[in-house]
Picture 1 (cartoon, rainbow, N blue to C red):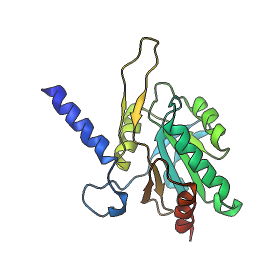
Picture 2: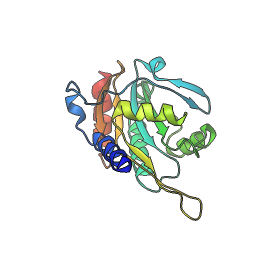
Picture 3: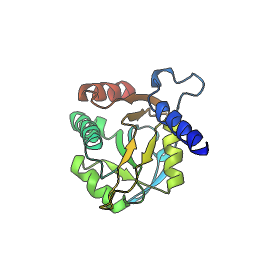
Length: 188
């Protein structure tokens, strides 16, 4: 019975990641939140990034398909922006696999997508708190015989406005133009 309630709770968490972020004032709708996590270059504190638009993606480096697609879209959006606009934007990947994703590995992985992308990690508790604040879900799958495992996770990119509030959630396969328009709309 306990397993049933645990699975039900997990399902509710995963479904929360599917909620519409356009109704942020409604009770129970995720609003995002500040976090302090570790990158290869030191601590990343989102409060210190006020005034910038943040594109926050929760994923992991061993992800075979959705993470690369989502991060490529965010990176293309950054590359489309002018240098002046780009200086006011940060693309941050929060790892949902702190067991394997070290700050050094995240830095190397992020560099494949864009030189200004930041990869961050923390303790399992810190990552869970970040995911909860954005309404994102993730679950580590059982280890396979070869030692590998997958982490199922929400595939949205969360857009945080310069005031630190969650402004939008961009779904997987959102056109790059929508990323750019969303960011530019927040920079005005």
